[in-house]
Image (tube, rainbow, N blue to C red; front, top):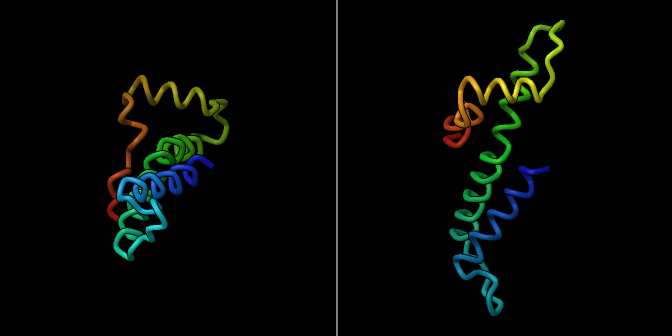
Length: 94
């Protein structure tokens, strides 16, 4: 899943940036916590557009023939690229 890839990739990138893993250097508790927060932020940010489209699909009328791509295109046309990230702030704050 894209979210898992971003979670572990973001955490690993953060640890690499902090110098963890080089020459056998182990991460401290604080470094692990920071890397986890960065990975979680990356995961949520990657999954959010998919979640917005999924929610729009679930909220459409049951007899509506619209598919995911139609909903995605209409969302971009009406709300712009930022519409894919609606609801991101509360998720990041939690």
